[in-house]
Length: 378
Image 1 (tube, rainbow, N blue to C red):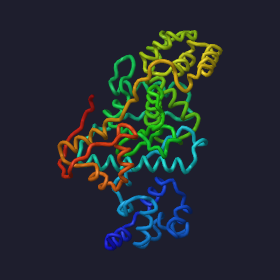
Image 2: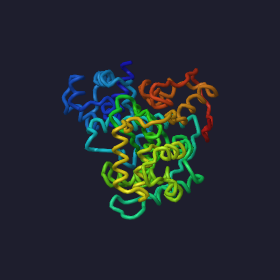
Image 3: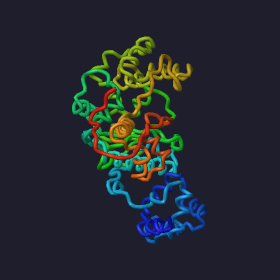
Image 4: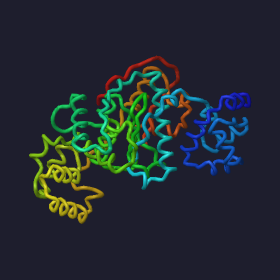
């Protein structure tokens, strides 16, 4: 073991230490206290100006609950996000929470890279349609229409949105409970775009809008500064047009708060009552006064938290969990093997490859041969 620690100390990657510290939600001074070093020493380890001693590597691994090998360089770090993560509100999310969430996304990229050594995923197919944050006009709506066209979507409601993203080369995962204070977010990489969903948002309609919102960022905001009000408004407009094209829904929307009609549209278009009301107002089908009164009714009846009517089950990611099952069944490669390849803590690995935050994938004995997963179907 000492020889192994000597090797890790020699090839120590400070960026991996930063990643592990951020995953743990720790500041440098907090980590320094846990390992009996100064914050200056921790900063030196992370910057690469100084390598830790083997005993310090062991202490870091213990404090951060990762294997010592986590601190060696990973190839995927060179292909990390070309865009900063798109968080909904920078003011309401602390820097340490954003760092922790982004670190988890980076770990998810490591897991995807490891699985793709064994499984062929659908090719990346996400067109770029930049819209400047200060642009006027219908840029977001045009971008949404362009994506529907590029993905050959028929008129009408969008089907299983998470699977649609996965079939076009995106990755969708649930965040761990530790990041539950952070809403859905996304970032792009040279490898694949990644969308991360909040694990506590138990609402089918809001989850779908979240995914469409993040698609908007990935399509329009490659170079945009994230978190600004204009950027978020554009992503919201993109999502509304992508899920409810104006040319198709405008004539269906009521001018008054006809709850029966709105309920029918909700079931048909798979969007919330609130999204429909906002769409009716945006398209000038409904007046501002009528919209405000309708939203007041929604608040008074407690529908902001839970709207009336049946709630479909959440859409669940399929790409990674099915890839793991395929490897287990056909190639005899188990979750422990893949987790070890990317040095991911097993608990976080299981969350990344799960259909839901509480699910766990199937295991098998380890070995390995290439298999393919080019399309996802139920």
